[in-house]
Amino acid sequence: MSNEDVSNGNANDADMSDADTNTTNTTDPTGRVPGRPLLAGRGLVKTYGRSEALRGASVELHRGEILALTGASGSGKSTLLHCLAGMVRPDAGAVTYDGERLDALPEKRLSELRRTDFGVVFQFGQLIPELTALDNVALPLMLAGTGRAEARERAGQWLERFGVRGQQELRPGEMSGGQAQRAALARALVTGPKAVFADEPTGALDSLASEQVMTALAHTARESDTAVLLVTHDAQVAAYADREVRLRDGIVAAQEVTA
Ligand SMILES: Nc1ncnc2c1ncn2[C@@H]1O[C@H](COP(=O)(O)OP(=O)(O)O)[C@@H](O)[C@H]1O
Ligand SMILES: [Mg+2]
Picture 1 (cartoon, rainbow, N blue to C red):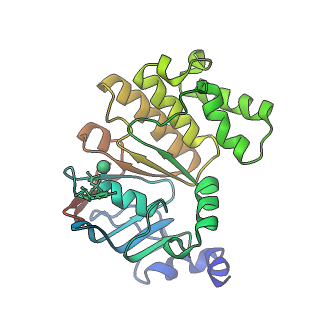
Picture 2: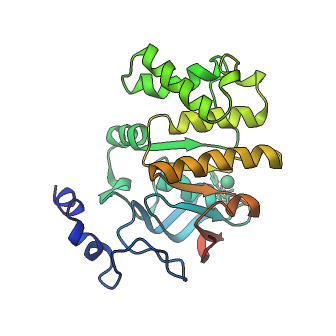
Picture 3: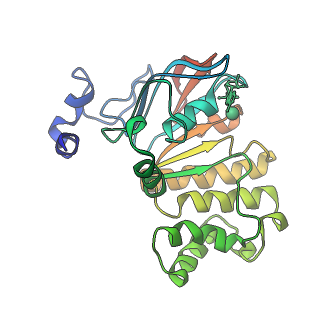
């Protein structure tokens, strides 16, 4: 309750996170962004058996920001994304979303929050193979209570804007990789999430298709002030981000401004 009170007070906003930062939304040269982040992971630790996927990683994601999470294979990028998206609970550390401790939420509340506030897209879009592109994109809206006709209408508009309206009656297996990823992106964005988690969304695409997917994602993020956590090891893809955080062996090795 108190979280809610303070988060609505603009004047107190900057004081909540860092007393020494100002309230403007500019990025400073060291990669630090002032103001309270939408999402923050602090000191995150996650161990799988004998494998230490995260060893105290901290990262902040701000509204309207595209943050590239880079690093070698096995450095913990996906694990960090899963922790921040509330899909994996860290062994230690805290995940805070909009002032609320995400890692402490009961499963039911967490899955509800994921459905209303988060969108996800993975390397292979994970569209439902039996459904057409249109029905895949309409599904999250229908799960949120939107009627079928309206859901399909809005889904069609998203496919249109991502240049795959002509493929809307195709099933994922009948589309090219790039078309399927753009449909997957439409599905992740159709509900108007506050944060989008994209794990190697262009990892299986050629450079032209990558560019189309990234242009669509970046454009939407800017326009709707959506925060995007983008895992990639492709420098050309990372260039779409405002900021880059590099992981090495489960901890943050470097942060820099890329745009
Ligand atoms: N579900 C899991 N079970 C066992 N080990 C895992 C699991 N997820 C990740 N790991 C291990 O944790 C480390 C980090 O993995 P990951 O977060 O997938 O890295 P990245 O995405 O950077 O390639 C790797 O050594 C990986 O084998
Ligand atoms: Mg990964």
